[in-house]
Amino acid sequence: MQRLIVISLFVLVALIGFRIAGSSASEALDPESKNDILQNAVMTDLSGAEITLEQFAGKTVLIDIWETWCTPCLRSFPTLQKLMDDYPDDFVVLAVSPGYMDSPEQVREFVENHDYTFEFVFGEDLARNLNVHSIPFKVYVDPDGQYIESALGSQGPERDYEKAREIIHRFL
Image (cartoon, rainbow, N blue to C red; front, top):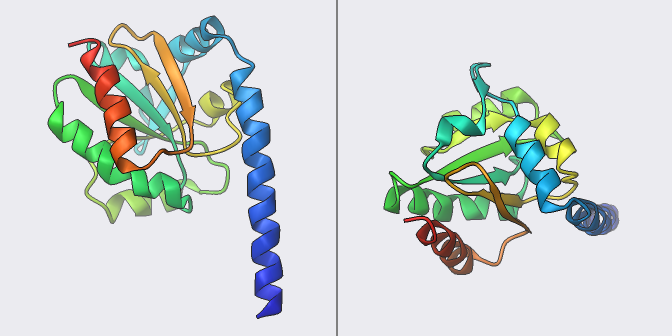
């Protein structure tokens, strides 16, 4: 039991350090650099087809960088689904797996076992280019494909919903 506690504390301290380092590294990029990265980003869907932001022109896009083991990531998924249901013509979620710890098979298994209608994609290069070292990490993109803002972590389902709703309503 003590060994489990020690291991748990070690993992917690490592994740906190990882989060702090990721926060400062990602914020070091200016909006213009983030725009360039987003405009040139090529992700792949679960079948291997290429996905770019151009495919979602006219919609506000939320790029949600997540992994299957990330509890805060998974807690936000019902909220993100509600947003997609509430704004089907104006909003889309790209759930981007950065491949930190998840294998493609783990992501596919997760998707098969859940009924989310997000665009699940692989985006290791995107996460690396944006200097994302901690998740959940969200990037908001306007209907013209331009970077709006990014957010590390979650503020809880209600606040996350309101934040995204406010951004969507800027472009309605």
